[in-house]
Image 1: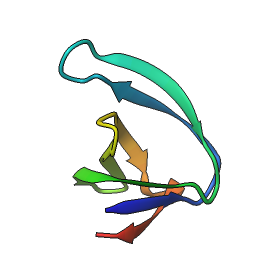
Image 2: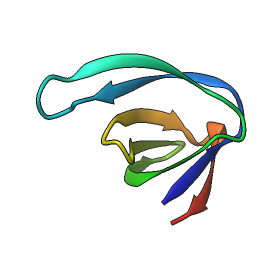
Image 3: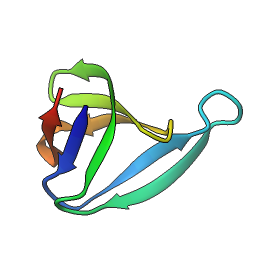
Image 4: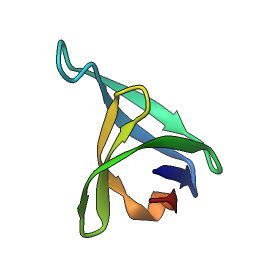
Length: 69
């Protein structure tokens, strides 16, 4: 699946979830797109795993557009 950000946002990204989880705050810019996997969809939010294995939880759908499912 592929997502594209529709606005600027700062999100907490969890990296190395299996060995030693680390929280990194990362800035995402409008029109940036990323490949990954939809982990879960909860009302107005999604949990998403990026292609590098890092994850973001509780990503508001209003921040993204789903390009491919």
